[in-house]
Image (tube, rainbow, N blue to C red):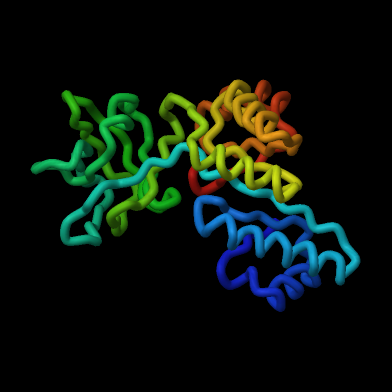
Length: 233
């Protein structure tokens, strides 16, 4: 599987990837526009026809997305074993985070930032503040993504994902990847949205949370395939 981005969507690069042995392409719907992805899909299909091969494409839904708030004087360098405070954007907070996230965090759970490059471990909660210890340090910047692989979070299909599902149905995508699923009901929720959009697309469950591992058997039955998101997990 190869993920296509702004550089690799070039037709010459695409052809080189196919000849090098790629047999499945992924488009990350967290980035770019639907029009850009539509053009990439058409390029893949054109190259596949010319190369005489079948090149399925998986469209990867963004899923629930959490990000850091404004970090003054960025980048802020976090050092291993440093204690940091997470909370709403206010004085005395090291890392501004949406309160919706904070209420679900529990001690010993991990907070991964920037695709898992930064790792924190929750130590305690007090009101709307969470104290955490830096396990893996490095620079953090405004709006970097947050993943909570150990935390039991609510799952909702966002308006963006609904729009992207409709796009995938219209473009006859080969597969849909469902992000941050934690149980079979999450896979079924995505499948229902696909059905509402008038389509039938195989769903790949992305395994990137502890809860997904704990309920792997039921997710495996509900989904049509699995993808392991190593960085987030």
